[in-house]
Length: 296
Image 1 (cartoon, rainbow, N blue to C red):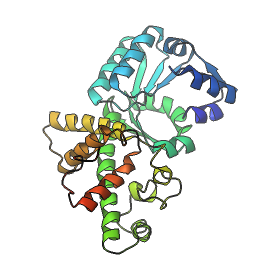
Image 2: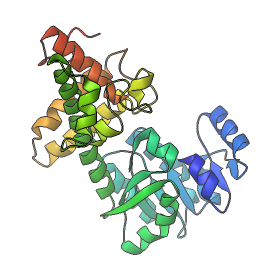
Image 3: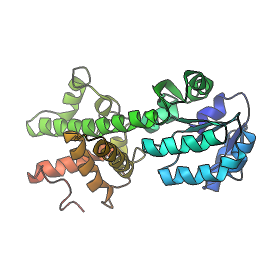
Image 4: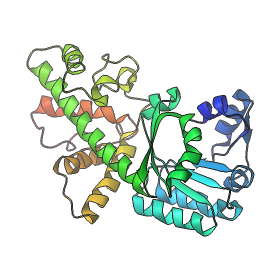
């Protein structure tokens, strides 16, 4: 995402990360990029500030450190995946300093980030405010959708990722069943990808090695969206469901599956399509009802 901003922005790009070596490498590669010493320096010198962090506590910490540097011209876009209530709390803190806050989580994975084809799901205080940040988002993505008021971008992201987890498990089981019944899983994938079962988990991030050359499955499930991050997103989705009095049956099952994977040393950092390997183990042991037991 930073690479696409560095290539497409008309002005300078200020960059900060706790990994200073990564920042130094980035600014050496892209002349428009300049290293900042702190989040506060970024907020002080840039009108638009974009953050992306693993957890709500990290986002809160960064906002605490930069909040005194913002003013009425500041546009703060957080593209982390956090719960909607935390996003609204952050928004209030920004409003209190006369800034304009947005929650804008993304979908599209590593491939989308690299290719500039992400979808941004945006919670914004107004249509007018959304239009101010849309050009920035479109440097990194193909779509930017205003979902409603602050917090609704996170609602969209959590619902999307719950569906994504369910679909990945479903694709994995379908391909494994095809193999068990004597059919080449790659052939089934090609049929699914031109039929009604087609989805991103099959046509872009297919879990069977070799179906999609660029998918993590072809490189040992490395370099993708980690199981531990999917588990985190599903925990947020399940909490939101509980708080709203909703019981998503398949979502709850998917949350249990990925929670198991996130606690396994050999799986927690692998791409979430590695659930295929666990599905395969379940098929092989004829114990498809228990995903976690005996797999460590």
